[in-house]
Length: 482
Image 1: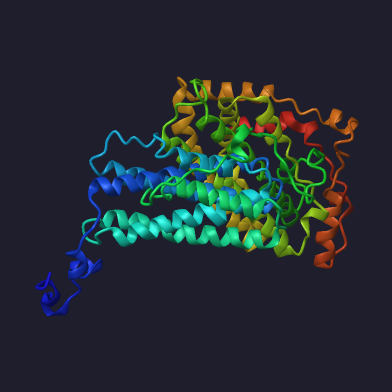
Image 2 (image 1 turned 60 degrees about the horizontal axis):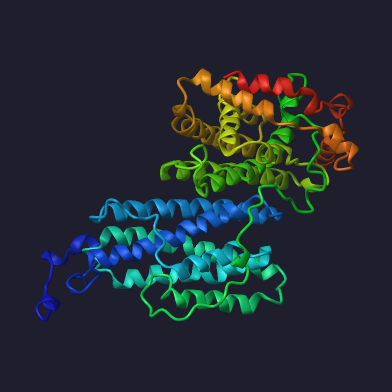
């Protein structure tokens, strides 16, 4: 090592491709087996974080937390993919990534999954689990030889950057949610579970484990969507946005309002997809639900995140126009609720694909992009441009993971249509039970937009009222037209 200090590259050019200097590259590092053991622990932690985001997304009432869980499920899925690929490169097929590295680590994540409130869930994830994962990543970055382990370090840099962002979001969220009496004792118990596992990466000395608190009775999954107070009438199906968009009698500028509603309404897709994915990945002994390859879960989690982005695009669109959407728009959850409660995971996937492929028709995503372009609203054109691009990706995902299971596209479409026929949306009964007023909220939204423009409403546009429930057959025709 004494000689390496004086070693110089030719003409002072950056040595070793710029990834390290000679002394650090000549220093110690983890063996392949030691590195793989750590990577497998990082993989397990990332997988449990991914599953927890999926498990709690649907039943989480707060819209902002739903969106955060959607994003972090996607990031965790990307981390899982990188870690799986790196382990596979290091003389370790079969990977053995389905094995639980330590019972105490399993109990640690079980406790977080079973946390009874949003505040406690956030505390477990963003005050304990993610910081522990971040520390494990930093420790491995320090311990790896920068030259020998350059591929691993590149993976770790991605995790490092994303985890910082995730932890910061959690910290900001916790700052505005009221603390709970059991919070601090439980967080200390979580730290004790990590100690019992020899730390998250397994480099510490294991200690005695505490007693389970919330996981003692197991976790009961809730697939029923929940919404916060900004969604006071989630059963309302009184406005059929598609009917308005496809009617040439209405001005393009006003159709943008309905498009923004359509985008915001896509909050129900992550609610449904999270249940589909969580139930599939946790299925045991059910060939219909389980047994999917990891690439399926990665692709579907990307689609889930895209749909959450679309909802936020609609939210931003209303904010940009100065419209406080909760005062004017009823965003229903009847689609996600119906699919989650009435269909199996495979049937939900069939309905998702059936609708998605219909969006690729001439009355689908290109039409909405053209509408945004013709409206003169640059933001509407932009979001529809990306919404269209995302849906093309989703159509490919559907071909790869849904259609491939059928003899042909026609059979796949027939099954998707039959599954959608199973879903009962009894809005009249919901109204009779007092769950919804099922009122036409469009006139209020339209009048507010006119007020902000300084214009008088057009009575013909203001009077628009076509119920979703009354035109479901037409919507099915549109979805099937591709």
